[in-house]
Image 1 (spheres, one colour):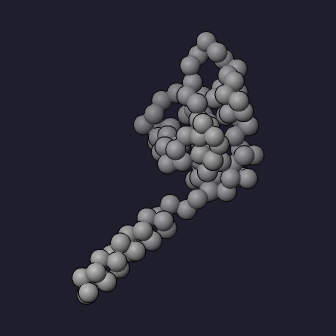
Image 2 (cartoon, rainbow, N blue to C red; image 1 turned 90 degrees about the vertical axis):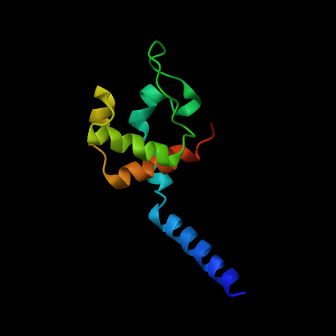
Length: 107
C-alpha cells in the first residue's frame, strides 16, 4: 500500500508541476492583440489578404507552438521580416494572451 501512495504522490506532484509551469494567458486580452495578425493569417474565417503568399493558419493552433514560434522570432531563431518586427513588439504576457486566444478558436 505504501508504494501505491508513493506512486500517487509522484503522479500528483508531476501534474501539479506541469500545470503550474505553464500559466494560461488571458483570452480576452489576446483577442484585442490579434488584429494585426488577421491581415496575413486570416484569423476570422481563414481568409487571407495575400492569397498568392502562403501563410500558416494560426486559429486553433496549439498554444505552446504559438508561444515557441513568437519567442523564436524574438530570439532570431526564426526569420521573417514582418514576423520579426511583430514579435519584437510583444511582451511575454502579450505572447501568452495571443496564444491562449488563438488556440481557443476552432480549426
